[in-house]
Image 1 (tube, rainbow, N blue to C red):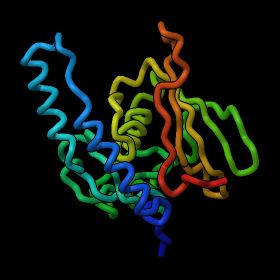
Image 2 (image 1 turned 90 degrees about the vertical axis):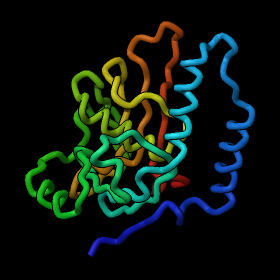
Image 3 (image 1 turned 30 degrees about the vertical axis):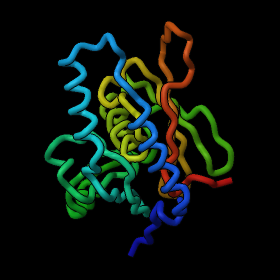
Image 4 (image 1 turned 45 degrees about the vertical axis):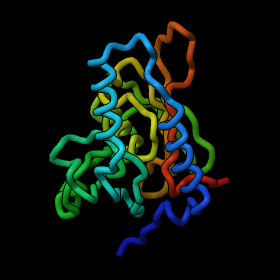
Length: 204
């Protein structure tokens, strides 16, 4: 049987309290701009209320079983699952472990769908074009939203490059985290988002 590692083993209770306190602080101190019309303000408030509640509690991915932290807008038929099962190579998601097992017998992916641009020992980084690998990048964003509070990019991935960090072994390249950047940023912004999966945080 596979071993499981929960992010609860990585993040202690003091960190969880800090995250909770920060969210409460943001809720109290964040106000809508005065020029926003009432309809937009009402819709934003409705969205905030809907996304406060976690819709998926646990994600199983490879050898890891991770407790999630935040809401993520997975398709409705998946967002009602308390536990989601992900292929650790192509990131396709499933409601049942049996469905994932059948998928794994056919899935021939062993690394992210891009060019390997860096390798150091067991660490390898791939550059993935959001336009060429749209489904993969969308799945990556949905996964990352489970661990990021303020993330707004989910489906519009084409204008971005994704730099996916992996841990390499005999079975393939296992995703540990990523960062993304806009291809053509008018403000010359280099970094759009960065995320490290909980089991791989604090590693040296």
